[in-house]
Image 1 (cartoon, rainbow, N blue to C red):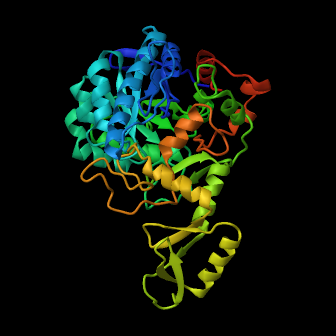
Image 2: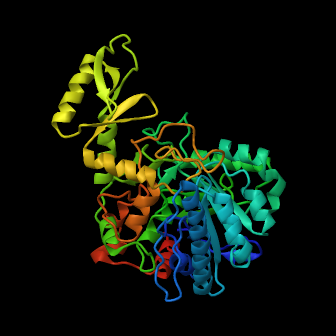
Image 3: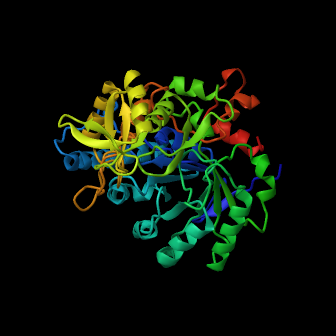
Length: 465
């Protein structure tokens, strides 16, 4: 294994190892501070970060506002206070070592307001801000305003070219690095474009080389590329180090830091990670963001798949094969189905899936009465955690609507991630993970249920393993 040399960023030498940001209370002050303390770059997620009362107890993120807009304001307040609390803890734990970055999702509700609210009070504690899940055109401008570095997350050279030409060329001196997040290997939301097949993964090396060529066109030969997604053993990337085609390279670890002593995820979640098999993490398209995302296939995803499979098209008037009348809702509005779909509906109703729900695509899904009530309550309780949500039809601008009907084929992402992060059911919540999570079971480092400290993990990574 080649020697892993420190990299110089902003006048300081740090290990070329970054803790990947994981939102909803996962990449917190304890984990980020420990990572920076080990000499790398720790990441505090400012996506629904936890905050604490004067007694040190967790403040539950409960919403009291009567309207979505009121609850959205509470969400932003929670986000700023939680971000500040976790940044301060990370800074203290790092004790002057490494760097602390913060992470936000560009498509989270109030992203820019949370960024400004955090950085106005903590810019001296933070080295940089990482941002993806969308096209964060204003990221460079915001970072430069506070004198910190910015690290956009992209999944192709084409995406970076668009960001650079539209905005980043104005703030080149503050660009700390470009995160290439592999859309087939990373956990969480994935940047697959319409031209890419989710079932036909492309090797990351040619895409990294393409990105480097694009960056070189803009005079960014010395700006690091950060490889994210699928990074487990550094020895697998030995040929990338000191490779002129790749240039300066940094490696981001998102999944492995989940299983450390400082990681705040519940113990049962840590134990589940050690049991995963290859293929247990899958791409799905149920996210209310509209993006593909990667998660452990459990009952939560099975139910969402089944919900969409119990789906038929309808028409408002008899047209073509749609001749069979069907009554909808309390008002008994009549729509029309094909004879074959009418047979499917009868079979679903016999199984207890007797409640039809309209989608924005002029289709109906069929669910049990209890699931219908849950979906409707979650939609009504929306607190605007995304800039635009297909599940609840919320948008954080204009008339606070995305202009479409709420989509019952999706789910409330804030509710499920808050629940699983704080001890909720592992089978009936969304469990994000990268596609390499099966390696916990195979890697001898974790034999006999060993859970390392962050320091022990970083030391192990530096050996190539």
